[in-house]
Structures are given as structure tokens and as C-alpha cells.
Image 1 (cartoon, rainbow over the protein chains, first blue to last red):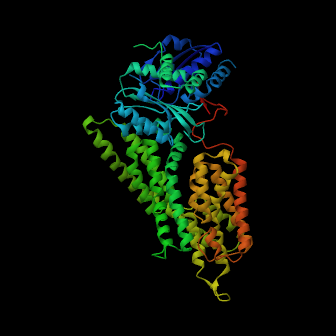
Image 2 (tube, chains in turn cyan, brown, purple):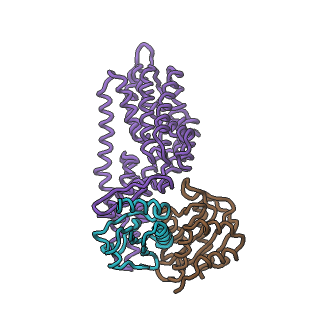
Image 3 (cartoon, rainbow over the protein chains, first blue to last red):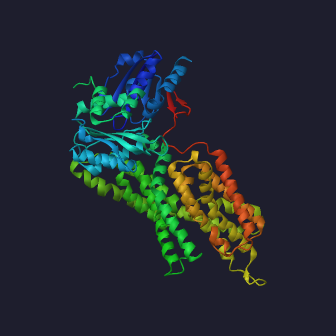
Length: 103
Length: 150
Length: 369
């Protein structure tokens, strides 16, 4: 499964990156391809391209703050999760996504 | 410098989360990282209301990004006695205090981001608790944030 | 607008935040009211110059601040500092106009949302400080005060008056129904005006003296005891629940529980507020327990001339053992309810072992704990 994700939180310093790391690991461990864009205090890092969106099976977006340039993902299967949920239960989230996409 | 020896407190004694936040802020202030001490404290407390900074396993990471911060800094505190952080999740015995300016300081932000990423990993978290002295801590942070460049 | 919807989605968080600032006020105010009654008998506000009077009035100052504090901090949770001043002021208006802490919560939400929206308005940099410190608070306060004074307060006061009239019209017919109604309406607002309103009826009836005994008619005394029963049960129910099932209460709530026990003994119902406001189940347990206690009380035939609940009330109760039994039954009922139904701690963060809930809107899935 190809997954793209964007993580962002209010201060953009801690949870943004922890969520990104957690989701990345959880997805890779299950053998999925994943790219995570972070929208932190530094700005947009590892930007997801149009092509990558087109090829993605699922999109994960954190809910803490409004995601910038959300329109890129219009029409895709989007999973809205809080950054805290990503940090604490990334594996459950990936499992749920697997069920919804493949199941 | 993101962190220096003066920003490291070992065997600290704090009464409560608020006490911790305030004392960490004062430490930042004394080293010249803040524009506005009270404002920074307020920003950190506000952040606490929005999202929990209890990372589990006894580590807390109070932080704020605001114009009350002059330059990005990292404070590390190891507590003598654990304190309650957010009601009833596990108590905290190690704190990473973070101050980030509204804009600028990109290199330091990347370092912090990298540090944050490492805090997902249990092995890294375990190492934090084994820190005996300031040099060991600085080493650990350097290792965690290596590979980050401008 | 999306932000307004988000505020309501998170309304529980905001109210909890307000409540957490409110707790010390309730505790201090309540404790001193309790001490006032302990030292000064049941009408300490009449005995000027005594210690009881001093304590009680002090406590009253505290409790009177409740609507202001909760309005200010609910507003603060939603919209940060600029919301505090309007919240305090409109909350205080709510207090003076009889709308109590319900008015306070509504005020806090109004203030929070309005301030949040006004903060979005882009102003010239030089004007920024003026905007935040003067313009926003003034506009929000004056509009809120207007709405509170000429609208909201009246609605709440009208409701209170309706309650009073309703009970007056009820007569002494169906005592169990009376017990249920008194229990319900007397506990539903946890001590703010409901049980004062309910208590006003028997209090008025107390002036009808039974020639045979030289005392107020028994029915008046019974009704008074039933309405006083509503005072002590909620906080004691909360307190005992925290002692018996500590795992489902946060540390803050457990502290509030200890205070509530003391407050409950002196029938300061407000002691239940921090706990009942945080969790529907605790709230329901308080109301349920009170209703049961009141119905039990209707069967005891006991009455009182003392217009207060808890320990002080006993001074004037005609049948103390039965009265205590009824109270005990009510408390047991409430506590049992809470212990059975409260499974989770009240927790704005979630715990690791809870289930992931998935809701779907079109092609979007929302994953929540």
C-alpha cells in the first residue's frame, strides 16, 4: 500500500515530528511505502508532490491544526487523526487503514 | 547554541508541573534565550492546555513557539522525585524544556525536530534515564541529532 | 464557521478547563460557609459580629464569585487572555441577576467565541495592543452584559419562578411524586438556586402554625426536610464514590472529593460541582441519589424547622434515626449508581488501551480514541 501523510501541530516543534516518525515506522514495519510531509516551525519539509498524491492509496492528515495546501488531497481516501494518536498508537492506525482500504 | 551545560539540571526538585515550567523558563531567561519571561511561561502553559506533553515513560516535553523567545533553546532536567504532569498518566522524572522563536533559527529547529523523532524509540528513552552527568547528556543529544545540517 | 464548530466539538474540554480553575474557589468558599454554619448555627448570616458570621460571609464571597470565575476561564480556554475580563464581568452579572453558574458557563462560551472571532480581525500593527486590551474586551463585555441582563438572566430566573409556582400548585397529594420532583429539581443545579427555590415553598409554609403543637404544620416541616435532603446528598455521594472507586477519578477529583465530604456534612451542595460537572455519570448519580433520598424521606414522616441540610439540620429534626436512614439510602443509591456506571477516568488525553473509533464522512475517515 502506498501511503502519504502530513503532520502538523500548533507549535510545530515536537508532536509534529514525533507523529511523523511514529507513522513512518509503523507503516514501514508492515511493508508499506510511505512519505510523510511535516509542516512544522521550520516550514513545509519533505513536500508531497502531485504525482505522489495520485499514486497514493491512503492519506493521513493530523487534525491538531489546519493542514496547509489540503486541496492536494481532494478526492483521496483521507484519514484524520490527532498527532497524539499517531504518537501513541501508530500501529493501530495503520491497521485500521489496511482494513478500510483492502478489507 | 541550542543547549549548553548551564541549561542542564540534574537532581532538580520541583513541586509541580507549573513549578517546573516556571523554573525552566527562568533558566532560559538567565541564559538569554527569552524576550519575555512571563509571556513564555504563559505560552508553555497554554500549549499544555492544548495537547499533552507527557510522552509516557516518565518524559515530559513542555514547549512553546512564540515571539517571547529570542533564540531556540533546549533545557534538560532530571528530577530527584517524579511529579504529576497531567492528572493521572505516568509521573514525570525527566523534562525536555523547549523554547522556539516565532521565526528563524532553522538549524536549531531541525535539531529539535530530530531529537523529538528519537523520543519515539524506547531504546533512546532508556538512555536518557541512564544519564549520569552533563557530558553524557550532551553526547546523547549530539548522537540523536547527528546528520542534521543547514 | 469551522472554528465555532470546533469550539463546540471541544466544549467539554473548555468547560473542564474552566472547572479546574473554579475548584479552589468552590472549595475555599464552601469550606468557610461550612465553618460558618458549624460555628454559627443555621442562620449565621443573621448573627453579625460572631465568628460564624465572619466565616460564613467569607465563604459567601467565595461562592458568589463562582459564575464570574467559570465564565472567565471557560472563555480563557477558548480564546486566551482577552476573554478573561469580559468573562469575569458578565459572569458576575449572571450572579447578580440570578442566573448562577449556568449563566456563567453560557457567558464563558459566548465570550470565548466572540473574542476568538474578533482576534481574527487584522488590525494595523500600531493598533494591535489597543485592539487586544481595550477594544475586544469592551465590545464583548458590553454586548454580553446586555444579552445577559435583558435576556438570559430573565430566562433562568423565570424558570426558577416557574419551579416555585409549580410546587406551590402541587399540593400535598402525591408525596412520592413530590419527593421525586424535589429531589430532581433540587439537585439538578447542584446547589445554586434550585434547592433555594424548592426550599422557599416549605419555608413559606412554615408560617402556618399548627395550633395543637405550637409549631409549624407537620407537612411544612416534612417538605422542608425533604428539600434540605437535596443539599447534602450530592457532595457526599461524590466524596464516597471517590473513596470507593478511586481508579476512575483523577487526582484533582479525588482532592475535590475530600473537600466535598466536609462540605456535604454541612450541606454545601456546591461541593459536588467540580466532580459532577466533569462527568455526566457522576452528575446523574447525584441527581438519582438525591431523588431516592427524597422519596425515602417522604416515608419517614420526619420533618424539621431548620432550613439547612446535613449536620446542622439534625438540630431540628423530629425523627433523627429515620431521617439519617433516608439520607443514607439516598447516598447509597447515588454511590452505587456511580460505581456501577463510571468506568473511565475523566481524561482529556486518552489511555493506551482504548479502542480506536472510526467514523466516515464521504471519502474521509475520522480516527478517534
